[in-house]
Amino acid sequence: MSRHPVLHQLNTRVYLTERGRELGRRATIADLPDALLDQYAASGIDILWLLSVWRTGEKSRRISRTNDEWLAEFRHTLPDLQADDIAGSGFAIGEYRVADELGGPEELAEVRRRLAERGIRLMLDFVPNHMGLDHHWLDTHPEFFVRGTSQKLHDEPRNYFTHDSGGQIFAHGRDPYFPGWPDTVQLDYSNAALQERMRAELMSIAAQCDGVRCDMAMLIDPSIFERTWGRPMSDFWTPAIRAVKTAYPDFVFMAEVYWDMESQLHAAGFDFCYDKRLYDRLRDREFAGVRGHLRAEVTYQSRLARFLENHDEPRVADTFPLARHIPAAAVTFLSPGLRFFHEGQAQGRRTRISPHLVRAPHESEDPATQALYSKLLGLLRDPIFRSGEWELLEVSRAWEENWSSDCLLAWHWRLADRVVLCIANLADHDAQGKIHIPAMLQSLASRQWKNIWTGDHFNMPVNDWHQGFWTLFAQPSQVFVVECR
Image (tube, rainbow, N blue to C red; front, side, top):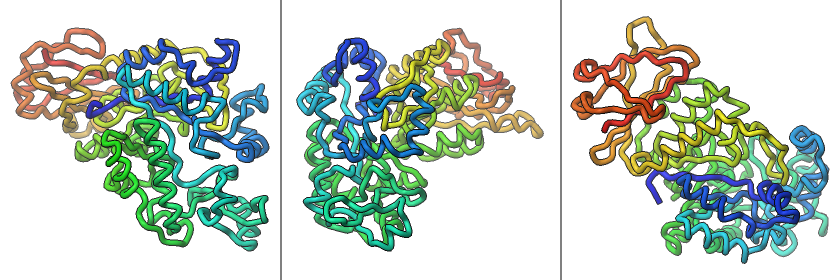
């Protein structure tokens, strides 16, 4: 796998619903067509993440179909909502076994083989913090879960529930800043036996795929777990990841992580962590913050998963007007790290689909967004963006009172004797700035340059480069990707 790989997230259940309509019958993962897998390979996809393939039980599904808050969201997404559209959350795990209605483990193994033939790795979900309400451990190993009391149930009815077998009270899985997820039950990582069983679950998953995306991975960091549940736990991630990588050295771990805890999870062994901070700064137009973020050590940045949307975030086409979307995409996906694309992103879909749903509304494709992602994925097939050396360039004010340089970003990639220089104006107005040209680049000014973003020849200002500063005047949202030939 390349140093800076490309990942595509497929909403498996939604895709199979659409595929079933084409086939006139229920579709399973065996029905992922060769043409689709060939398209992924041709687009340079290194990793395919099949979202939500594990079994969801009836109890958790029933919660999804009766929770008023969730139903309001589902009806907003699907005005013609039907009960069968709600299959329960793919993160309320009833069992780490591919759901029978999706084709079961045999079909998963065959899809993995077909992906491997095309050089694509298979990624699946691992949800470490909790299980669904149907998990058999509630009856066979209740000690594996955080229990509650009658007083806790009375005081925090959204965080605790009574299990229907014996009236025992358990905690729902939760993020400490929000109420519990009512279709889940919280695992107790202060129990060493539970940790051992979860390592075994993880090892079983690792035998079926080439990587896992670990849901809310920071929730079982010892400091977070103790703050949330008032009980200490030993480190889970470091020994668990080490064990899997001993058995499967090339296995990939990606963490969903927030609260600036990326470094802790990198230290525990994760290959990649969500770069939510870059996304937030681009969304909130904190241009100086974006530049500061990209000043981090490249070894650290190379282990970040960079995205503009995923199943948890709003659709980028609905959040960023196209004029902002274009430079934000250039910054996100032409920077080092794992490039993370979501199903429907390249078509300009605007409706976020809850992981409880298995159907999406029909949306027309947007040609301008398609053109943007066709261009980006074409560039990302180039080895210079996958294996090259990256460096951020300094940008200063073109003249003292002109603050618009804050809106400009510049960086370059090097591979052998090739150089690609990238510049993006994140603002929807003109911007001017002095790009500082390092000595090793100055000698290249008089060579032939081409703007591979537009396909046009590019005249480099040789005199500016030889002086070490290039005063650039950028149009609103303008992007340059210029190659030295």
